[in-house]
Image (cartoon, rainbow, N blue to C red; front, top):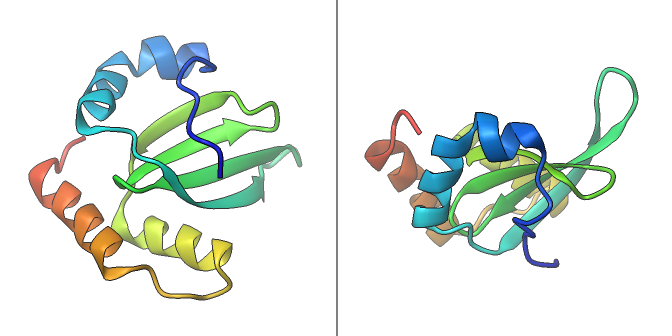
Length: 107
């Protein structure tokens, strides 16, 4: 998977979520480990990517980042399993995401 391009971001991700972006940049965006294609209510494609640091990146069909946030463990497991045909998430990634939830509960 290609690296996450933080230069191609929506206004929402850059400005309206500036505090979250600053926090994630300090934590580290990580590298993509799982991506799934989804469709919104209007049938438009978008992509959910889970990174090695437990960040969930939401991109539109043009690869622009719409938003990003620390993934909850449930959604991280779901994206990982969908991406890998039901394979369990590696314990190291699971532990990282769980630790994020403990250390940064409101992030």
